[in-house]
Image 1 (cartoon, rainbow over the protein chains, first blue to last red):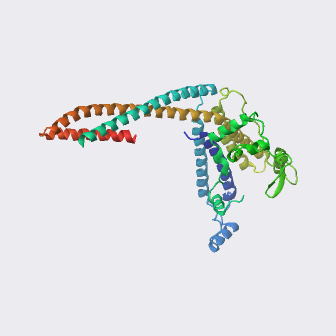
Image 2: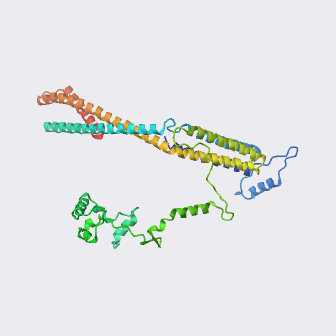
Image 3: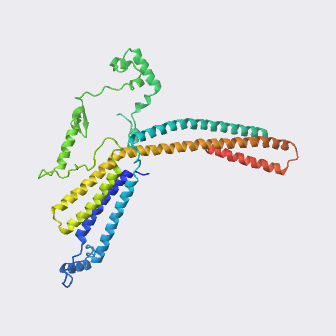
Length: 148
Length: 266
């Protein structure tokens, strides 16, 4: 279990960032809408932009076409929905929702007692291990004497 | 301060400055000696020693007596400026002044960025009376909904006042979520502690169990070794050593070494 709370906050900020970014995208990159009943000719601005792009490769890329724009919008929306789902999953897996503070404290006390008991047991086990080690060493020494 | 050059080099190369050299005098023996001296002088441990008493002490014990705190009017220099101990007493007020100055616009005097917000959930003192998860879900979905509404408003009229209202809604909701999450932090910390303790319990249980199992095996093998070893020796003494017995002995020794590895390497 990682730090879910920080993750929630980070993802929330990210979601807000995405919202801002898609607004900025719509504002800056939306292609002009064609007027119904009028022939769609290349406007002066578009003509200049294409000329500029040809003359100067470092100029910003030309505006996306209507289809590209819609595709980008769909992608941005999908990312945003994904982020929102991510947040929902995070909120759903918040730790210890069903426990009150008193219950938590009681559980901690219980675990502490258990740990203390186990520590004594562990120390006894370690002593036992040492005794075994000495025993085995004694055997080996005896066997070595016998052999020599 | 009259340190030789190598000492200075040491200070420069280590990441943190070295502790003052007299820290080595703070041994239990010296502390006991100082306590003994103080009781011999009939002074309470709290009262400071007089200069004459200090001079009676051996040099290494003198370091154990802390110097008197500086008087409020004593000056010391910070970044080349003289200052006194009490000069920082107005620190909170100074910080508050800086804060308000940063928050207000330099020309119009309006509050530029105000982090105060409307609290959308009831504030309670007890933990369980508030369903934080439900509120978080609610706020999150409201944010998305407000965003869609904001999109609609912008499509209709990018300059309308409704846009600002919607923006403020999103901000309020987001700030509420942040506040709720932050209130959750102590709870999560306790929960993390509980999990860590549970893990420790598991680990210690495993350790004890491992030692027990190993002990049983060692005893088993030792018992087998004693029996088999006795027989083996008899056969070694006797000239006619059988190959089968020899193999069995090697096998037993191998087992023994395995157990030894386990014991020593555990």
